[in-house]
Length: 173
Image (cartoon, rainbow, N blue to C red):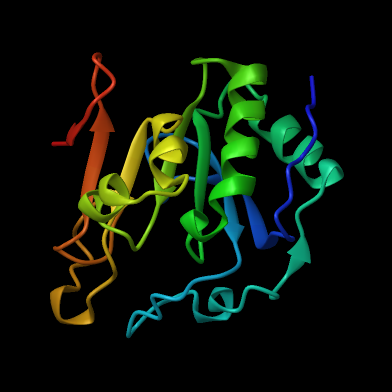
C-alpha cells in the first residue's frame, strides 16, 4: 500500500507518542515533526524549531507509525512539532498514504502556527494538506494569551477548526 515517499529534501521528526490524550480527542498517536520558523515565545517544543533535530522520517518509521495507529482503541493521528506545514510536500504524501490505509476510520489532527486565513491564502501545498485533516488547531502560541484550561491548545488566540460534512472547516465548540 505504500506509494513512494516524495522528498523535496528530508523531513525529520523528534518523536512519536504512542497513546496521548492531550493532542486531540480520544487516544491518539502523535508525530512530532522537526522544523518551525514561528519561534513562539514560551514554546514548549523549542528543540523542534531546528529542521535537522531528531531522526529522518523514513518508510520504516511510517510503517511503525501506522502499525501503532492500527489499534482499535486509537482514534487517530496527530501531526504537531515543530510545524508540519513547513513540510507540506512530505506531509501531503504521508496523509495520502494514511487515507489509503485507514480511509475515514481514523481521524487526523494537525497543529500549526499558521492561521487558517494564511493557509487558505497560500499558493503552495498547505491547503491541500489540510483537506486531508479532520481538525486543524491554528495560530501561533502567544504567551500573553496562555490559558491552561483550554482543551487541546495553549493560548486563547488559537482556534480548533473541525471539518464539516460539506468539507469546509468551521470553528469547533
